[in-house]
Length: 77
Ligand SMILES: [Zn+2]
Image 1: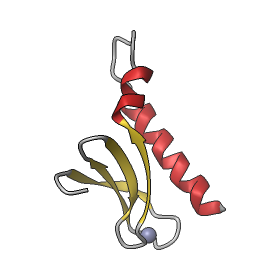
Image 2 (image 1 turned 90 degrees about the vertical axis):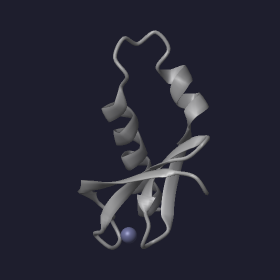
Image 3 (image 1 turned 180 degrees about the vertical axis):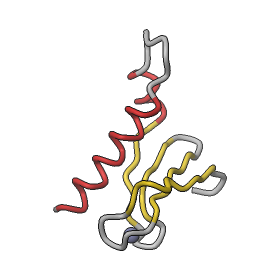
């Protein structure tokens, strides 16, 4: 991940350390994770493009929520 865009999700906390989770976008992927614990899950932009075909409104919330759910699942294992 060199050139990327990063924001913090201030109301979603890391299940391990309780820090705010990060939402990162790079060339190919959108990531959600914790910078402190170095745990990330990602989804490719290709996958997102396929998912939103035919939709009038871009489902940001749905996509981000799925990433958060994925992260929590990974952390439970
Ligand atoms: Zn953490």
